Amino acid sequence: MRSLARHIGTLVCVLALGCTETKQKPASKPDSAATADTSLPAAAVLVGWYQESAGRATFRMCTTLGSMTVAPEGAAESLHREYERAGGAKPVIVSLTGRTEPREDARSGETREFLVVERFERVWPEESCEKLGVDTSLENTYWRLVELNGAAVTPHEGQREVHIILRLDGHVGGFGGCNHLTGRYQRDGTSLSFADLGSTLMACPYSDEEAAFMTALQHTASFRILGESLDLRDGEGNSIALLRAVYLR
Image 1 (cartoon, helix red, strand yellow):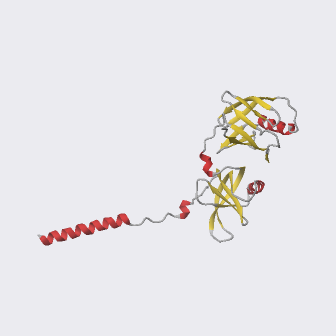
Image 2: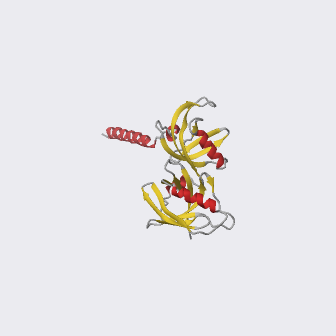
Image 3: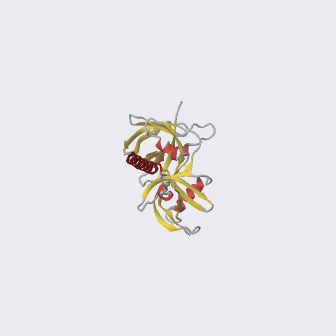
């Protein structure tokens, strides 16, 4: 009986050790290719970091770890021009429509995912992937004009900054560069239009710039908010004005 008990005890210990070894077995390392998977067989709207370095253009989506080489065809040239206009020295947040294709890398000979840019939307200055979760409201936000018809806007010496505020009651107010502006707006989802725009009649050296801003508002058909930036677009989907949220104290 004692011998049988010893055998049973030994068997229990072996089984217990086997279970312990199974639980403590190191987990296999995640496949880096799977972690950085960016496969997009169909065109999709993408937001992420774009950069050019050492003769190579790369794009990394905000939702993934891996970066892709940007293919030279499609809207890649438009993306390149806007990147250079934005400074061309560091990564910038861009939005675009694109798809991926596996291709052989001419430098390494390896097969990699290349991004084919079908439509370039815009560069988003001062934005980052970390800010994309910010829920900035269209209404009751002080929106400062930073870009108009593709050109950067900065206040002239002694000039107040151009801005608009869309009130909850459907009215819009702000400053156009020379005069206070007023009007109404209508929003339906991402559709946005302005009406009955008017201003005071103060004369100033920047009246042409103010008129261009008023024209952009009159041609606005839709909008998109990304992080703390508001992009106004015309009926064809082209960006005509970019504004940044200012938090007043």
